[in-house]
Image (cartoon, rainbow, N blue to C red; front, side):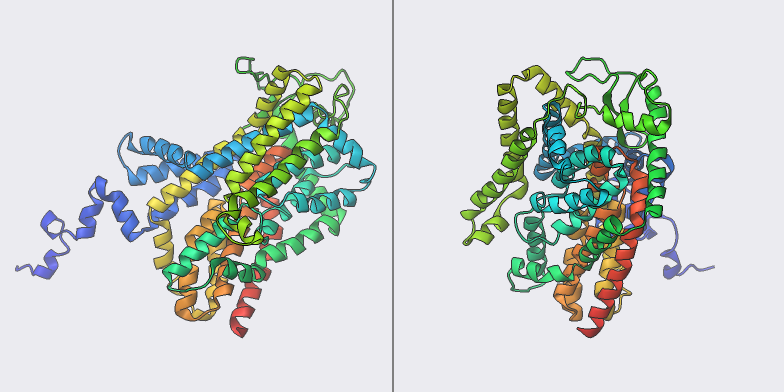
Length: 558
């Protein structure tokens, strides 16, 4: 029988193979194929991360598996996947802004450590305890503190969380409710502030690039400011947060307490099998000192016997907090509120001044100077100056340098878990991009969207992406070019589309268990990452649902 040339095209021999299939058979071409075409395989790392994290209760394990599988998809040789996995981690850690974030987190946690040692937190709590006498008063303090800590979410978390954690025992306040109060006013609020934050420069830059690509000649900063009212998720989640923090009935809080205590019980069981770390690196973790519970992704305390002082698990839980790693409540710790006020106040003032100083030569006008400043670099410089000043102040008060260094390192080590997770998150995001994630999303998941529903669809798509990658910045970078292009081509409101993109990224930063905000909050407060993220998903979905309705309504009437 005669075989037609058309039939030959579907046969296996090399000379009849489709060129794309030929490329796929070549290992060296895999990365090129993924980047050019974008296949369903780009979804595999994200599909693996969340369920593995939930099943194992270890966010790190899900990220590790997702990164490893993604690396092997790109480099399917015996050791090629492992080799390139290491390269992804290292290459993303040494990115300038990423290493700045790592140094900032470690240094700030170290600063908090020596402030605790010298009585700063104990003194500040003693000072404000005369004013804060109720749970609602403590919640109000957490919300009002936003005015002094709005520059960056992780900065807000590591500044306020230790203070609120110290207040929680006296007021019998749920640590999970404290976490809510802090996170409701972290990323959602900061995304709405157009000046003196670590977000502004990045947000304006991606808008500017997207506008340039689409041929739109408008000032990026002006467009950003005008889009702020359309970041519906940030606005709605703040309103939902007010309800959760001030009006939610006690019965609902009890379920959160039960979750929290079960996590603490798990942590204590884990710690019984944990050996103290020898003093061979300047850090000693022994009875009463902090250790990482790698099972839950939180920090807990190693404790010995308490000579019959407490007879129940509930009282034991309270004593574990009372004897915290940095002795904030131990009797010999002095009461010196200025040891907190001076370093933190200096840091805030330096941040504002250096932000203006760094940007004033790059732009005209006071406000434009803040926009042009390198916010992350400025904050790191201000922090290191505050750390040096704090060491000088505390040594003047006759605290030993060796003890200060030890507690600085011990404090910084409390965020090593966060740093590891961030490193893995950055690497997973990078490998997914090399697998063609954004191209796949653009070509397969947006072709069916009607023009009228561009904005709500952008929000839903971005919310899903941001939940899986846990990064608002990553989501904004992925979707902003797409959002602006779709808005221009479909004659949809540009401001509405930009607002939807920013809102979608904020959803993931708030709700995802992979978010650095979630991980940092849980680490500082000592609560389970996965359980907390699961409980936080309820208010997030409420706000997201309302946001979708608003985007649909505005798309219809505009």
